[in-house]
Length: 122
Ligand SMILES: Nc1nc2c(c(=O)[nH]1)N=C([C@H](O)[C@H](O)COP(=O)(O)OP(=O)(O)OP(=O)(O)O)CN2
Ligand SMILES: [Zn+2]
Image (cartoon, rainbow, N blue to C red; front, side, top):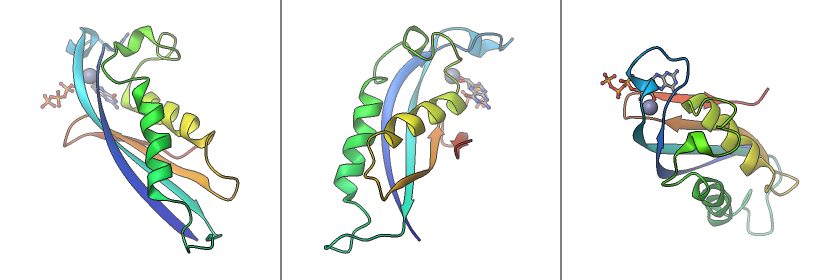
């Protein structure tokens, strides 16, 4: 089994509904995102998949969030734009574009240097 990881960043505003604290007010973060995929089968170049292709999928998914007020964008108009839900959204969106022999392992969303949430699938 092989695992690949790529990282990226996006900046966005959010507010957490029902939080009962200062994060209920509009504020922003520079999220760092870590995407891990896995699979057994290497191609003719001995790659599970090209890091560049994986980064492209990650960047496409993050572009939709970058410099936005997340609460105004689907699905975060329905579920809170917590780091947990952001990780889940990116996991599902990036997963749709992977080649058949590669699957998602995890997505982590770092809200700050000290705090991250990781989604591993259901
Ligand atoms: N499990 C989660 N907990 C929290 C999340 C989250 O997404 N998942 N998000 C937040 C807020 O986004 C908030 O902005 C975080 O701010 P805060 O807790 O104040 O942390 P800071 O790093 O900004 O400040 P410190 O006071 O230095 O911790 C809250 N919790
Ligand atoms: Zn926040």
